[in-house]
Image 1 (spheres, rainbow, N blue to C red):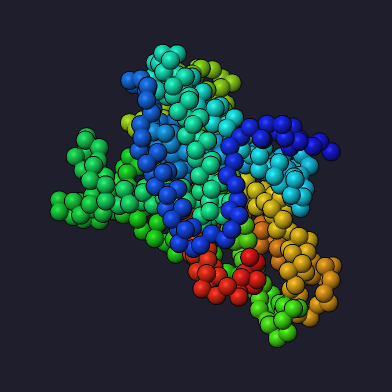
Image 2: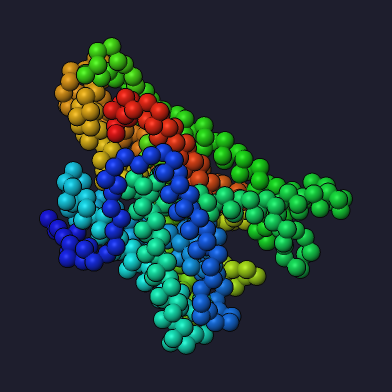
Length: 471
């Protein structure tokens, strides 16, 4: 079997690394470092790139920016896209057994992490070069091109280290999740109350302010919807409904009664959640679709701006809109959903194909993540036994426990992956603020942070329960 990750071993030592804390980090200190990471990200999201030329192509990522936690024309131009893409590539290679990675081996896990970092830097350089060559920043001198490339590469490395800082235990959660949640929250707030709108219609952009203005003008219920992809009240209502649905679905679970062998009389339950893999599938699906969209648009802008090349037209054709470049045909047309109810009703075939592709890809990544992440029935049964747990009514052996878990885990993996795909797709079709994928991710991230905060607080106040929490 190909030991692909060993090829990265000579290079890992040259990359910056965040060391794990050699002591227990206090709860308040973790909050402090998490806040510092968030502030640094937000500052970088507002610092403009130096050397950008005038004009240039319209936003290559457009509505996908909310998923990539990126901001046009700033140090966060690429956002988390390269990091997620690097992880996506390695997960696909590992899940398809094209490379052999033993996640039970500390050496393999370390090499896998190092390979992800190296590949993330490579993807940062690749995407930065694509932006520059594709004309996203207009006509640039060679000096400015190198300056922009250096800025984006440095920003990508800093973002990677910020994420690693949290994941190594200095802070809470992961930087990727934190950045996504911050970006989606910003977008939702802006869509709600933005005081600036397109000059041609002389209306406010924020849905609440615009609806109040339409009532003042006597438009009545016509003000519930707006053309041109602008945020409206239908999108606001959809956003609220999607949040409620996601919270409800996240609470569905099957509880398996367990007991703790070391402490007689201790009984609890092992929950298998309906969304067993959480929001992982939709993150990878969004990264896959987003990168395909980005690359296709760059190729179109560079080599096929008039849609005259038949073979490139099969990949995608575009038209320049007022604020973005919109797909009009080709494969990429079906990987970009209609972003409002009008677009959905005008082209239900496009919406149906997109929803089907998204669901299939989410299921694929859900199954792959379960295998790669050690969440399959065999691995979970082993973890339960090693932690001293046993399932009531079954002998303390891996085979019967694995058999019981196999009744639930494969089913919830597939159903959970399909569910997040359906929710994300139809939220997009109804114009939900922050996109359906963004809302789905943010609700899941907020839930994870809530559980982390409770766990950290409990372990801080009651040190004796740390063993039960796996610390």
